[in-house]
Image 1 (tube, rainbow, N blue to C red):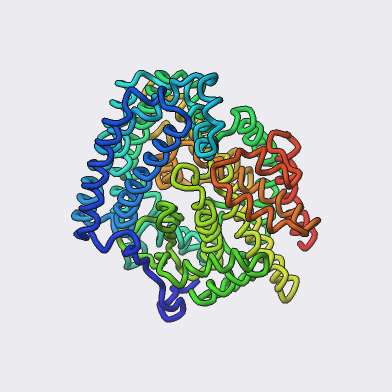
Image 2 (image 1 turned 90 degrees about the vertical axis):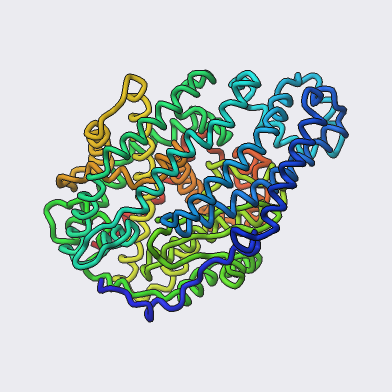
Length: 594
C-alpha cells in the first residue's frame, strides 16, 4: 500500500486532558495532592487498629471515605500516565510522571492497613454487619478483597512491598517503555517508530514487508540483552512474591485477580492449543495458496490478499462506520460512544514518543475514560477503533459502580471491545458488494480472530514457559528467543518458515512486561463474544437490555452470574468449543469460496 497522506486520513483528534487537570502546573493538581495527603493521614489516624471493631454503618462510612480517596489518587495518577503515554521521549514529562507516582505511592502507603485489617475480620463477625444496607452495597468489593486472605502477608511486609513497587517493578516497566518508544527503525530513507514499522508488515508489497521485518528484527535484536534483563528481573520479582504468598503457579495470582478458577483458564488454553490444526494451520495453508507461495515467512502473516484493494479509510469514515454499527445494535451505546469523538476523549495520530499500540484507560468514575490509538487509515485501524470504543463504553457504563467496583475482571473486560469489533465486522460483511469482497472481509476477520485467540494463547504459553524456567535460573536472550520461536512455530503451523531475526520479536509485546498473563483475557473475550453473539442472533428480544446490564455491573458480579442470563457457562468445557467453532466455520466458508 502506498504511503497514506494526511489529506487522505483527514484531521486526527488529540485528546484533551483538561477534564482531569489543565497541565502539569495546574494549581488544582497541587491542591488535590495536598488534600489526598492530609486526608490519607487523617484516615489512618482515625481507623488504624480499629477496623475490626466498627459496626456495619461505621464500616460502610469508612469504606466510602476510602473510596473517595482512591478516586482522587486515581485521577492524579491517570493524568500523569496519559500525559506520559502521549510523549514518552520528553524527559520533563517523564520526570513529572515518576515524581507524581512516587507521591501517590507514599500517600497510598498510609492506606495499606485498611484492606489488611478488613481481611482479619472473621466471616462470622462480618456477615451480621452486612445486614446494614450501606455496607451491603460494598459486599462485592469486600468479597474480592477477601479472596486474597490466604495469600496475605504480615502488615509490615505488605507495606514494604507497596512502598517498594514504585522503585522496583514500576521502574523496570518504565525502563522498558522508554527503551521501546525510543527505538527507531531505518526503512528506506525514513527512521520510523515501532508502530509505523509494524504497520508496514501489512503492506501489499512483499519486498516492503520484508524490509520492514528485517529492520524490526535488527533493531529489536540489538536491544534484546536489555529486554531480556528486564524480563528476567520482573519474572524473578514475581517468583519471589508468589513464593511468599504461596501461589501454586505463576499464572495463579492473575487468575485470582480475574475471579476465575485455574482449571477454567487451563481448559481455555488447552482447548485453543488442541484447535491449532483446524484453525491457524488450516487458514495459513489457504493463505499461502492465495499468495502463490509454497511457504509463508513471518512477514507474510499479516499480508493483504492479492485482490484486496485495502482502501484508505479516513478518520471521518471510520467514525461513521463504527458508530453506525454501534447504533444498529443500540442507540444508547452509540450515544455514549459518540462522546469520545465529540468531547476530545481520543488521541489518534502517530508521533514520535507516543506509546505504540492502543488502549482505553478508564481513569476514575468521577471523570471519564480516554482512548489512545495510532491511526494510519487501514481497515485494521478501523477495527481497532471499534475495539477500544467498546472498552470505553464499557468503562462509562461500569463507572456508576464507583471507584472500588467499576473495574471489571480481565476475563470480562474484553467482552464489550470484541463485541464492538464483531458488530462492525458484521455490518461491513452484510454490505459486501460481491463474493470477492466477502472473501476479503472474512479472511480479514479470521486473521483478527486468530490474532486474538491463537496468538494470545501462544503468548500465554510463552509466558508460562518463561516464568517456569526462570525459577531454575536466569535465561539468556538466546534462550528466550528460542522459546518464542518454538511456540510460534507450534501455533502458526507448517505453512511458515521463520527467517533469522524473528527470535527478537517477543520484545515488542508490552503485556509481557506491563501485565504478566493478561493475554489470555483476549482469547477468553473472543470465545465468549462468539457465543454471546450467537445468542443475540438467535433470540434478540431483550438481549440489548441484558447486555447493557452486564456491562453496567462492572466488577460487582462474577462470570457465572453475568453469563447466566444468556444461558452461557464458561466453566463448561463445551463453552470454548462453541467459540472456536465460529472461527472454524469462517474458515470452512473460505475454503468453499476458494
